[in-house]
Length: 114
Length: 113
Image (cartoon, rainbow over the protein chains, first blue to last red):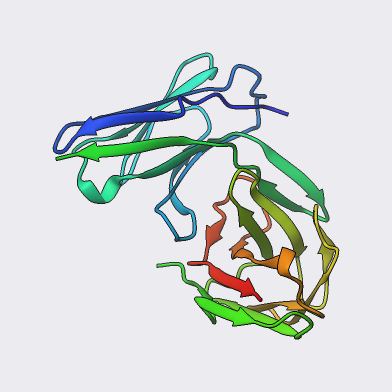
């Protein structure tokens, strides 16, 4: 099972881009990279996911290296409301019967500073 | 937008009470999940369901049961609440195929006194 390594915490100035790294050197060919975030006292919020290609949506961009051993989540213009714990997940535990779940690690606590 | 709605945001129950936590999703998802989240332990899977009336145990099913009578609704039941079940409970749902997104509800904070 692929595991991820993220820095425990990061700071980012408000209005600047926040670049959150994730290492997943044991990822296998059919495992997706997912990013979620969790603001205190709320449920995890889906941000973005990808397999091989870079992805962009209204919230963020996901850059996956060519060897797929690492990725970076980019929040282009961080605001105070982006302060949260960000989780990079590549493990999709097969529960059988076609079901699967995502296993959350400890994540990166991003603090956006005024 | 995908919506996973948990019926209660904050609950306080007494030891020994029967507790129902309800979850409804509006995206016709096959999979539904119940997790609990505790400081330092992360999210732990209690039960999941991949179809109506189907249920499977997760990592920590002891002391819990579930019910899925309709595709959109998944209930978590604490038959006899205990203080060690004080936690935040999260419901989630997704389509069956791997690679699809799992969406979470806002969470239910349960305190058992």
